[in-house]
Length: 526
Image (cartoon, rainbow, N blue to C red; front, side, top):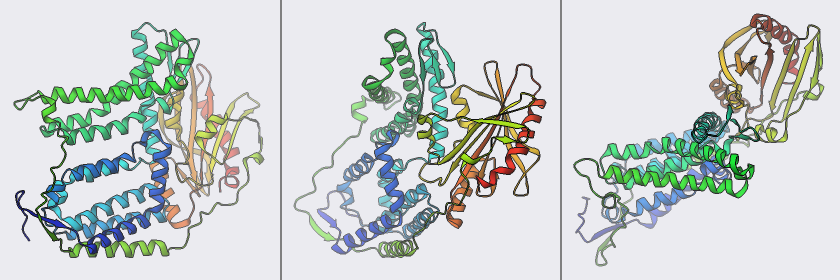
């Protein structure tokens, strides 16, 4: 069947068979990725960074509806490449289910959906519908460890630029990491002010604006990419403005409704800046025109009422893709329910405070930090020996590291408190072994003003000692897949360095403490 022209009064309609096959395929995709899709919905409702998620399918539907006249005249030839993409997506979703990695389930569902559309319509139609298909990728939340690292970096940037802005207006301010000291007040630039709440919604808005922007490709790319620096700039101005208002009118300027209203106003101003950018770009170059002429927010023309209606043939590739998805969904549903194994262990309440020549005293964390860390058990204790040396021992234990609950890397958290990492590397701790393997740790020297500390830390995970955060995530996935376990711990040792103290001497004390404490850990971190 050849493509009809725009003036041809012949329209193609799907048969009930096609509608039933597509519905069955979509149900199979949902069954394959149910856990991931449910978690994505939870993130949309509970995380401001992705609260725009429910609107994305509606935007994609609108972008597709814009093409309804053209689509009604196109033969859907299908493509066997879509069948292959469905198989890949289903496999990714199945692996995500087996490994309890929700992000893989979400990516698998998206790949399978793209494959289904390709298997139904063919490459010509998919190239025309690239925008609504691509924008669906903005629905998927970033993995928690990526989000945490990005949030920490944005907090530091927002703090630095915000303080610079305050100083422009003569405000006396001191910055320690994410803590802005105004003298009478100390403002914490926390996750609510890091800019992520604007970044992903504004990037999505930038993509939509670029799709509607009828201009050269470089202008559209620039418009979309500019959403990132605009977010950073406007969020920094927000932090700076809050600091100025707190300086003049008190801490209430950074709390309650006013604080939330400032966030909403910053997003609206960011969107206005992008509209202004579009207006400027529209006038640049030979094709310069008013932006109203290049902003392609158009509604489709009504379909001709006198058109002759023909039924679409069912592409064999659509049937094949549906069979693949249904079979994979059947495999997924037939798998036995996976129950995560939590090994027996001793509670840190029983961890000894007397270790050879070291005597310890327990301390605790405030509830606000416990709520953020979401750990299941922890130990925080300060130890001293007869020579006066001090070591802080911190161990965070997780029964399960799924659904955003995992050990936070000190390399990410320490800069937020104002500590700067002066040295960083990996060392083997002399004379200390775990499970018969020499203990290798991350070693850092950090500084805050005149204060310095020597830090050892590692991730003790299901019989492994790891120093690389990405390997931690890989083995978390692998052990969830093969052993039904995702428990694990972060272990951190800190010794403060006196002014002028030789690091080698402190290292010797820290090594001595590790020899006494580390062999006891397997009973608490199995």
